[in-house]
Amino acid sequence: MLSLLPERLDRMLLLGAHCDDIAIGAGGSLLELCRAHPGVQVTALVLTGGGSLREEEERAALTAFCPGAHLEINVLDLPDGRVPTRWERAKLALEDLRAFGEPDLILAPSPHDAHQDHRTLAQIVPTVFRDHLTLGYEILKWEGDLAQPSVYLPLAEPVLREKIAKLHEHYGSQRDRSWFDAETFGGLARIRGVQCHARYAEAYHVAKLVLGVAPLTGLDPGE
Image (cartoon, rainbow, N blue to C red; front, top):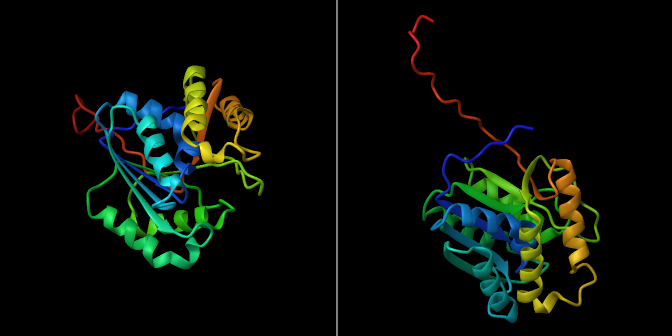
């Protein structure tokens, strides 16, 4: 299996419809990427939960999941479950972010996600960030909308354990949910690990990827 390392990772953009989406879908990846690129600029936008306990949880959680990063978090107050009816405000929020620089990597919901808020955000992203590497994370839920991913980031077992511990530590409002437990998070990570010859992994969906080839050196033009 071919592994591709990013040429640079100075800026990351994290997008979520709800507080906890980003950490559930990409928490392990954030721990690994932020530690591998100390000082990376991370901007997070969450569409719902602003002004509530959920925002407090999200700010504490993303700070923990992005160690050593220069982190900026924006949490809007769009109504949960009604993001499709607030399309214009959501798009304006992304366009505001677009004006502040070029992210090297965007982590966002997957376009096929069955939750209307997740799916709406995923549909807006490519209308604003048209030429950027965007990876769609996955969130296991009742709808059974998991699809076969194409991108994997292997996780060492200590990193997975750290992710699960941080999820439970920072999202107390979600602990009574039937799906919010270590078996759910660890089970999906184990399956994705099997699929990329690792013990555990987080997986992503990518709609478009451009490969660059370094120019050959040391050869005559005619060779």
